[in-house]
Length: 489
Ligand SMILES: Nc1ncnc2c1ncn2[C@@H]1O[C@H](COP(=O)(O)OP(=O)(O)OP(=O)(O)O)[C@@H](O)[C@H]1O
Image (tube, rainbow, N blue to C red):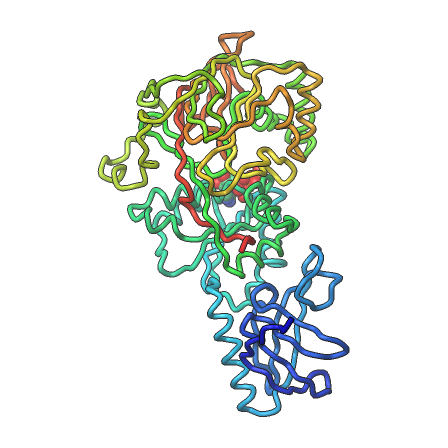
C-alpha cells in the first residue's frame, strides 16, 4: 500500500557532529535526522525548548533512559539529551528558528507559572526538589516562573485568594496534597471563582501524601517522580477534576481527594502519636486498630451512580442537621456579602434525586475522588478524575484476619474485591456520624484531604479546633470543576 506523504515543515542539510546530514521537521512534530541510522525526536513529547549558540542551534530534549533518542520507548527514568546542529547559512538558521518557535507555540504550553514550594512538606525536601528537578527543566523549556515558599499553614490559600491570575498560565505545587487542596479552596473562595477555578494546577511530588500526582502519572504508566511530573506540566496537557463540596451548616470545605470516617481516618490521624516511628507508624497503628477494632453507629445516605441503585434502602433526601450552625465556625462569622459571592457548591436539586440509606454500625467509610490516596495506597482502583462521582469504599463488619489481609491489599487496589467491602460510585452523600458501639461516650474523627474536619468527643486531640462539628455533613460533586496539568493527552 502506498504510504501517505508526510508533510514537511522544513528539511535542510546541516552540519551535525562534523558531518553534513539532512534534518527534517515534519508537520506532525517529528524531527528526524540520519546519523548511523534513523533518529528522531518528538517535539510534542520530548523537546523542551531550543536556543541559538552562535551559528548553531541547540534543541533541548528529555527522553526515556536506556533508549537513545527515538520516538517510542519503554517507560523508564527520564534523561536530558540535546541535539546540536549548524545550519549551512544564516537564512537556513533563521528559518529553523522560526519553524521550531512556531511549532512550540502551537502546542499551547504554559509560559508563566506561579510555583508554591512547601519546605516543610514530607521529608522537608521540597526546596531541594525544586532546585534539582523543577528549575532546570523549566529553564530548558523557557518557562518563566515566580517562586513562593509557603511560610505557614494556609499561606498558599491566602496568596491564591488575592492573586492577579492574568499574570500566570498555571499554578504549580512542589509539595504534598495539602497545598493543592489549599489552592483549590483559595480559588473557589474568590469572587471570580468561576473563572479562577479554570486556572490549571500542576503537582510535583514533595510531600508525604502525593496521591494526586501519583494518580495522574500512574494513569499513563509513568513513575511518580519529580521529573516526570515537571515534564507533564511543561507539555501543558490538561484534564478536568471533580470537586466535592462538603457542607455543614454554613461551613464549606472543597475536597479533591478523599473523605474518611472510622478505621481509615483513625489510622491516618491517630497514628500521628507514633510519628517517631517514621513511615512504619501507619502499618503499626493499623495493626493495633484491627486488633482493637472499633465500630461506629451512624447512617449514610447517598445517590448511587447508574449500576449501583440496588445498594442500601430507598429513602428521601433529608436536610437534617446539615443546616445546623457549626459551633467552631459561628465564632468567626464572615460578612454575608463575601459569603454570597464565593462558590456555594454545585447547583443540584438534591430532593429530586433517588437517595439510598444504610444504617450502621460501620467499621470504615471512605470516599475517594482519584485512585491513589498516597504513593502506595491504591484506595479506589476505578476512580476517575472527572466522572462526576466519588468512589465509596465501605466496610460494615469484617473478621479481624480478613480485615488484616484486605488492608495489606490496599497497595494494589485488590481490597475492593473482598466480600466484606462494598465498592460503589455515588453522586451525593450524607454522613451522619455516631459514637462507637462499644463506648457511646466516645466518637470518631472525620478526615478529608489530610485535614481533620471534625474530632468527636473522646478522640485524639479532641480539644483542638476543627472546621466542622462531629455531626451530619453533606457532600455533593461538581463534575470537572477544576483543571490539572496532566500527562494524559
Ligand atoms: N512553612 C510552613 N510551616 C508549617 N506548615 C506549613 C508551611 N507551609 C505549608 N504548611 C502546611 O503543611 C501542610 C502539608 O503540606 P504538604 O501538602 O506539602 O504535605 P503533605 O504531604 O500534605 O503533608 P506532610 O506535612 O505530612 O508531608 C499544609 O496543610 C500546609 O498548610
